[in-house]
Amino acid sequence: MEKELLFKTHDVGKIYGSNTVLQGINVEINRGEIIGLIGENGAGKSTLLKIIAGVEKPSMGTMEMNGKPFQASSMMDANRQGIGMVFQEQSLISNLTVAQNIYLGREKDFARGNLINWGEMNKSARKVLDAMGLQNISAKAKVRDISFAMRQMVEITKVFDIVSETANNRALILLDEPTTVLSDAEMKVLFDKVRQMKEMGNSVIFISHRLQEVLEITDRIYVFKDGKLTAEVDTPGADEGLLYEKMVGRETDGEYYVSVRQTVPTEDVVLECENLSMFGSFKDVSFKLHKGEVLGLCGVEGSGKEDVCAVLSGDEAKTGGTIRVDGKEMNFASPSDARRAGILSVPRDRREEGMIGILSLCENISISNYQKNASHRLISNRRQNENARKWIQELGIKCSGVDQRINNLSGGNAQKVIFARVLDSECPILILDHPTRGVDIGAKGDIYGLIRSITEKGFSVLLMGDTLDECLGLSSRIIVMKDGLVCGEFDCPVDGKPDQVDVVKLML
Image (tube, rainbow, N blue to C red):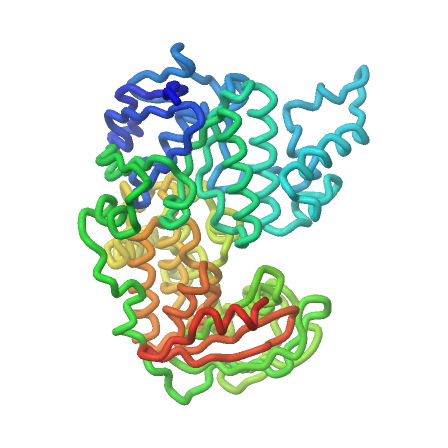
């Protein structure tokens, strides 16, 4: 079958002030093709997608779609031309229903005079959700009341519906890290839908830091580095080792989780839970966390592990059982109570819970630790800036300076800022909730090394990994949860990691 060009860019670039983030980008996407974009955080992948989607305007270069000049003044303008984007950081409105979010900006399709027929909208949304295999999501539910993974599926459904409606099977769908919070079953639904869209003649650009996903779903892969397109790879015949080498300019050394630095925990118990319970979520959870230990919590979405961490970080209230920190019984009414007891978390949802986007990198680092930078109850900007520079250097944060807004950083660098704040607090117990979600393979390596450094200094970590492999690779010990109960425990010494199959048998 002869290839038909759907979309192309010619020397597209983007400049923010004096910082060139994209330069001379030339990509071509054929009709019915799935293209992967890979590269380290800050390489320019998401910026290119935002330019194509009408969120950003290119500083230079031109684009074409269906053989005609293309430019989009807004996302809605791009939608009308058959281009839709699912963002890495979700863009749904939490106090609207699922149906209202799917048809946001298209309400006139359900208007009768000056009134909107909400019943018809809900009925239409139900059909769209069913077509995506999402029978478990109510069209009438408020977005704030459904899980983070379900929100991602709603966002994907919305984009698929928009482009299917407007592009007559000549759509271009942009997926920026769509799978980071999805279960294996949800990811299969997404990939099946992507392949279906491809078979109909639509095209997809797919960004993921999980290289095995890129290899599974794409036809071709473009590699970005430092704002430039540095390589093009045909997916058949490629493997993760080749992609990694193309991305970072060096071969992987095979010691991915820095296991050689895995510490042996001491006998000192820093955190103990005894018959900890939260009605409707989990029951009688008991474990001890030792000094210098990485204790992994494993289980499928909804197993209760997320709620255990929420209780320990002060976000939720326990309904039974006991929490002891250094042998002293504790009750947390808020995250600040947990913080005073020495517990602080790196949350899963970086945008909503982990950072304040309009504040600077410097302010985000010090926001939990203002007392360290205070003089006579007044904040010292000099101390704040010096402290931020120290963390920028120590964690290798790529930025233009301490005053750069955190929401202008790449995902991996924003995550490092959140780590800097947590480490700056000097809390001895850290809860890491999917700490590598949405960061590239290079930044993951940095974070793994950071976790090893933390435990070498005597910190203790409660970890929910992004994958089971990650949890096993980083942990000294894991606890497996299912249906709100602890159903197993495995020691994870450097030379004796448990078989993943044995763990999965308990989880499912």
